[in-house]
Image (cartoon, rainbow, N blue to C red; front, side, top):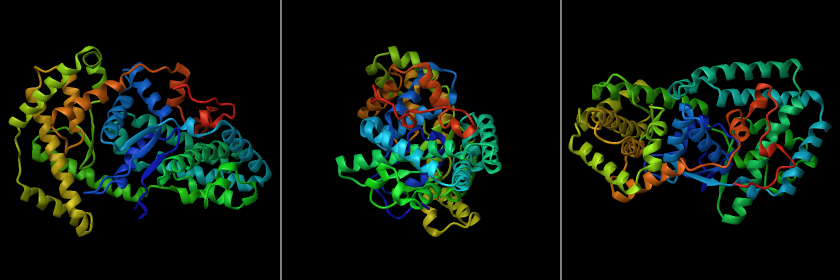
Length: 437
C-alpha cells in the first residue's frame, strides 16, 4: 500500500504515463478524506489537449482527456509549467554530470541498472494488471505490442547489444527533472511534495548512492537520497483492487438490468466514461454554442434524470453484496465500507446510463457531455455553479493549442527510447529553452 506519510501534493514525472497513473490512482484516495493533488507538467497537459483537438478519431486521447478534466475539476490535478521551475543552467548541469557519471562506471554496473529499470517500468507501465483498463481505452493491442517491444529491449540490454548508458541517461534525466521541479516548488510554495515514480527510482537511487562524489547538481542540493523524494505504487494492491472493482461492475450491471458497462470505475468518486467519442460528438456544441444555453439545458436534463430515477435494490441488499465481496476476496472489515460505497456509486451510474439513454434524445450533445462529465464523479453536485464550471472546464480542453505536429507526435511516443527509438523530450535536451506555452 501507499506510504503512511501523506504529502501536501504529489508530482508526476514529465512525460509520465497517463494511463498507468490512472490505473493506480485509487491508492492516493481514501474514503472520507480529501486526496492530495497531483501536479502535472503544463506541456503534457497541452499535448493531451492537442491530441484531442487535432486527432478527433483518437478515442484513447478523448477518454484520457475526460478523465483528467474531471480530476482537474475536482481539484485533484494541478497544472504547472515545469520548465519555469527548472533553470536552464541547472538543467544543463544535471544532464552533463549524469553523462560523466555513466562514463566513469563499469559497463556491467550500467547494464544492471538499465536492466532493473526496464523490469520496473514493464511491471508498472506495461503490466498485465492494466489489461482491463487498456481494453476500456480501446488501446489494448498497442499496449500489448509495446510491452513485447520493451521486453525485447530488456533482453538486448542483458545480452549487451543495446547501449545501457543511453537508456540510463534518459531515465535519470526524467527523474532529475521531476526532483528539481519538486525542490523548487517546495521552496517557493512552502509545502511537502513527493514525486511519483514508475518503478525505476530504486535502481537509480542505488546507482547514485554508490557514487556520492559524482552525483548531479540537483541531488547534491536535495536533502537525503533520491528515493526519499519518490514513492512507487504497490502494483499488487492495484491488481487486487482492480479485480474487486471488476466484480463490482458485474453486480452493478445485473442490478441495473443492462448488458454493457458504460463506465470504468476507479472508486466511489471517480469513473471513466466508456464512450470514447465524447469530445468529438459534442465539439461543435461546446465550441459554438452559448455557455448559458448549454448550462441551462444540462441543468434541465439533470433534473429530468432525477425525476425519472429508478433504484433497483435496497441499501440492505447492497450492504449484503459488499459483505459477500469482502469475504470472497479475503478483505478486512475496514474494507467493507469502501466496497459498499463503490458498489452504491457504480449501481447509481449504471442506473444513470440506462435512464440517460431513455430520455436524452431531445437534448443536444453539448448538454449530454456536460451531464456525463458531471456523472464521472458519482457523488456529483447539481447546483448551477457546478454545472457552469464543468461546462467551462470542458470548453477549455478544446481551446486551440500552439504546438507543432512534431511536438504532438513526440507526446504519443514519449518514452520511445524504451522501444529502441531515438525520441527526445524537453528534459533530455541540455539546450532546451524556457517554455513558450
